[in-house]
Length: 501
Image (cartoon, rainbow, N blue to C red):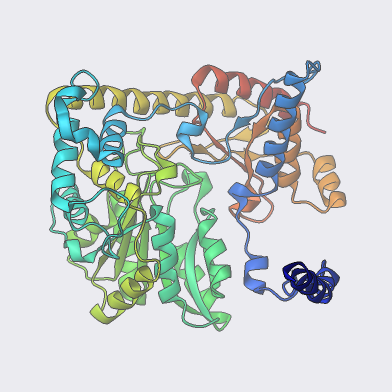
């Protein structure tokens, strides 16, 4: 009896199964009916060249495993396409590792005597204080704006840096700076004619999000001949050009220190930008994630400090992240946004948007708190200062090496690298090469980057992915890989460019 019932059930299901199998290959979603803005969005640092680099690296590993002779002039891919320090050899700082380890497994704090010799005393104390304050491990949701204690630490950090007060209630913790940028742009771009003024070249998150949110780009060119300096007349030109197309400029972005250019804005330039935004009633987005990466006598000035010095009250959003600087904790996705002089009702809407994701990840929140409140006493501080100084000294040295080497290559020119962790050299490409790129349907520097990868193992990002003046060609290279490895790669780069056809 039961067997017959089971059999009838199976037979009844067969037509349904056939109908389901008949739909195989017929998707309700296809490239033609999904969000067109998503299809049009581009993000160069994860684009075609890095994808090809991943395939090449896998091929090199496979050949080595199978004992196949490698006839290339390199045995590994040098990933210079993205600011991802730990992926190319930078070691995590001990203090961060210790505190996050204790917070990920707080049971270790039950008997701290067993931690002696493994963890610094100060790291244990910080973990104990954090755990006691929140009464939970990192697996629980937080307030949508993030841990209150971390936001208070961020506010104190800003106050120490700038000499002006900061309100923890105006600080939003986020998954890196990128999520906060997306949240703010989502609020700003209210209709398809709204435009955002962005530097050219720029970090591709801005063009990507403007496209995704169905807004308009209003690019203003940085002055390459003057070390990628700001040009106020160019800001006016960009603004008026956007207006002439029927667009409404709503906000302006600055990236300081610059990505991909490596420039550091002067106090005077930032002051002019703030006055411009005040005059034109623009929101200012100040991307300051590289503020610790300074390799010149020219200091970093935050937009918040300059604005306060000028006694201006423009709407200003500043961004910082645990991914850059000397920290390099990219995968933890920690960061913050400080919003100054925003209408309270607008702030509430941005907080509502953040609440739709419940909260940013708690490991990133903790890391943000550690970034803005480093150890100041004991062995933890000694080790921290030593590791920090070693990383920053290494980056400064490599910035000098890459600047000098690139400028020694005929047909390549590189502006001084004052900050951040990238070089953005100008490439003088032979006419025959640009014609070959045209025949291939590629931007010349995109073909250049692809052939550079295949010939040298260097993975860079074509300048066209960051936008650039028409008729110019660039490539962005990080100088994060180990010094000896990077110097070998630069020699291959020189040979490649000199023999380019």
